[in-house]
Amino acid sequence: MPIPKHSKELKLKVIQAYLEGSKGYKILSQEFNVDLQTIRLWIENYKAQGEDGLNVKTKKTYYSSEFKIKAVQMLLDKIPVREVRRRLNLSGT
Image (cartoon, rainbow, N blue to C red):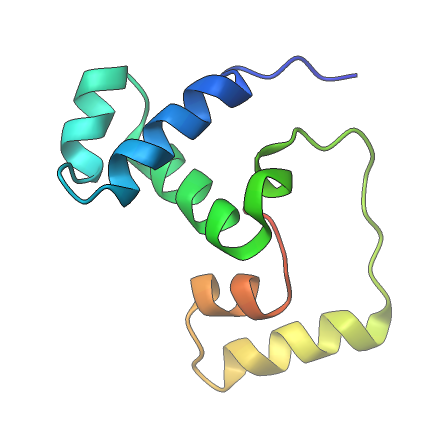
């Protein structure tokens, strides 16, 4: 089982600080010494999947050909990657 680099408690603390609206990604990144893009990913996953989106994946997910074609078609339709991930319930890892 992979060992998470950051605890779930830390992730929730950072997300809560962001959702309170007083601090942005850059300030939180500096305050908690976590990469800005990592914080952005945590928040996106939390908004899409709740606390389950913060769990470390323990097994590889396999996707059907149809699912992959749907994802690629969305990208070809110029839908941003973040939006595709949100719509298809994909993590950023």
